Length: 541
Image 1 (cartoon, rainbow, N blue to C red):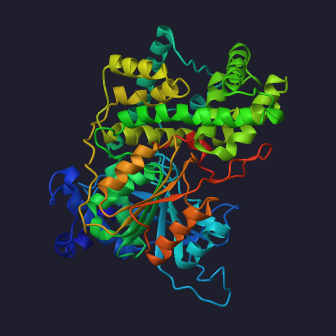
Image 2 (image 1 turned 135 degrees about the horizontal axis):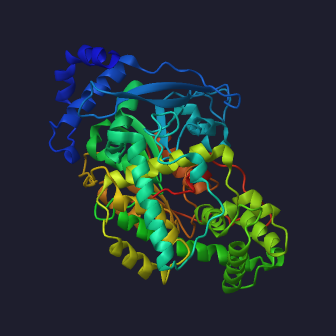
Image 3 (image 1 turned 90 degrees about the horizontal axis):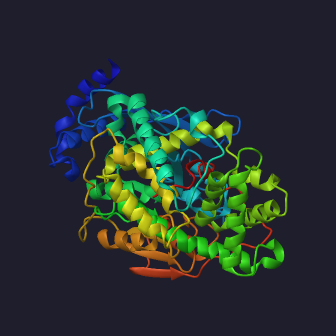
């Protein structure tokens, strides 16, 4: 009843809203049902705003406020079922961290998405307390949110959480035919579970709707134009947003950019990711070998690989702590491919395990039952969005051929990545054709693209493609570095470009480069970064 009443109230304003409605090419025409529905939802959100109150939870900082925004499940039917997205905010401090007597003008809201698909940005506003973010936090309300399907935002689920975190598991680099058949059966069952638990709603969890939701959120925040920071997958639907709503963009930062080529979304993007992880795994082994005096895992990358293979073999015979098998080892060390600040802890745990002490490895790699529901939810959203977004091969022989071929030269992550995505071969919901992300000269304000040259999760070629497709964009490269997500990190050069762009609208030339951050020091464990990082297994395409 409430949704119908809101729809009627918005009706008198619909004609004026449609006059500025964006071209929704992926949905058909500028006057598509989804485009008209987006205009209705935007108008409702602008009128309703967001009623922010103190966030739930004892650990929530006092500066953090939370609220919700209502969006249509199906934008073609804006008067139908509504879902609520949770939103968090820390108001602009307006205090110059370099001059306590100077008041900084507020520039509006900065909306953040950490990627995934399936990650929540609800924790982002707390970043304003970190030194790297204080200048931005002075000028902007920092806004995070949980996208549709994530957390409390109409959450998706495909399997019971206790089944999702079963352990120990195997992770063969070159699987047998029997093992492949088992994984095919699991993929089919997982896809069925997604459909059974979500019903007809499943098809509406996709990148186009994520972009439309972002425009509704913009309006609910009272912003005429969006200032946005997207990381990883957040760069992809940020670019979708820029293509659909170019006149609604104020400033946009795309950090660790996905390759948006429609021919690569998402099957080929994932193959490219697996190949890039092999190079990043080599970086880790080289670093461990240089510090053989600390870890005693071998003085060459080949020796470190042998140590890792020895651990895999032992865990296949007897799981550490009864729960850490080769699959859990793989998951833990995959994170070292995303973030080099994890290198010391992973190397130390492997070294201790091979010396007979498994405690550090169990603490690092054992499934956390307390966070199982969140991990399963993240997996469900990841799967739904990527499967819905684009066509995938439906013939197992194509998957088998491509991954067998790739695993010969890139064994570290190839098959693990394939099993993650295999439900898309048997997906029960209709597939879309990816939007041709592209803007012409003058259609969009300059966009700032950030990328680490050796990023594995989103290979550097994706940043080059993204910057080519968004006319007038500027690319900042952290050379010879591979950490995934570089905005607000320890590289002062990168942060200088970020601050200059967000605070003053300055962009470097079409290409700029920064020297790499220092390598991690052996024996120094990683500090906590983002609570959502491990929940996704870092799986951000």
